[in-house]
Length: 367
Ligand SMILES: C=CC1=C(C)c2cc3[nH]c(cc4nc(cc5[nH]c(cc1n2)c(C)c5CCC(=O)O)C(CCC(=O)O)=C4C)c(C)c3C=C
Ligand SMILES: [Fe+2]
Ligand SMILES: [Fe+2]
Image (cartoon, rainbow, N blue to C red; front, side):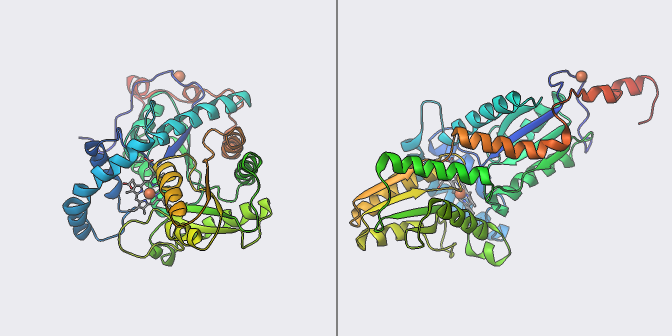
């Protein structure tokens, strides 16, 4: 078997030759134990996600986690599943459609599509498809505002592995993060202000909880910028909202396993606040570009139960940006800054620049 893929025959699917791919984490195909087992196996086998030496982790994963967790997680997924499927997939697909429309309105000749790091449609499958359609320039946008090795870097890894086996490689760019992007922050700010208009403003005794997905604390010690980027997003948002330091707190949710994770933890904070006489909590999760299990189940459902059971009176989850028009505009601006060097507003036929491999062979050229 040749190490590098043979070039596909010449096609004319995408005369623009430029593509944007939104990549999110991935989600099971169905809220069932077998689907969760497949999803968790792929996700939790990624050495970027779980940094425990392989033989030890293989035993824990296959011996314990993949026997117990699929059933429990499937029951949780069932509570957020929609007629169209998993919320994460549904939102990501809609975001790609809206971004395509917006970039088209702004005069760019680009294909916009989406992929999932785990599950389907996979990054290599989407890249193969784009290349076969004629894409020669690909911008990858990992849909994580804050950079983390376990999320952003593993998307880059996956694309790089695909490049490794590709003969005629497209030009590629990667967005690193957008944790302090003004358009992203403005969209978050507006979403909170809209929520306050509908539900009344926060009093001095109420709190805004800004909750991010957690990571093992060790990632911070090893130099991952995630913790700092979360704090910057949280601080900039609180400043835009005019909150005092008492009125908001940055916390980390979804702890997994026994090791210490980034602190403070979200669930114990909600419990403590409920018991300490805090009347109302609004929760926002700016690290999630789309609502998913972690926001709709863990925060909107479990978090509410924790806070109210501990004595709190009022609890609101402020939805993720999802298809918010302000956010789609901000995403369009982010994409445009990367596309600028590719002059996507002028006609570009990538094939006009070259002889196809077949023709080169026919005429005896050695390219
Ligand atoms: C074991 C470690 C995990 C790390 C490290 C981790 C980091 C991390 N994850 C997200 C975003 C999402 N995670 C989601 C689900 C999810 N995450 C883990 C574990 C780790 N995440 C598991 C096991 C699961 C699956 C659900 C479960 O069984 O509990 C999701 C939701 C996906 C969905 O289908 O809705 C997202 C999104 C980030 C941003 C991050 C590090 C910064
Ligand atoms: Fe062509
Ligand atoms: Fe996660």
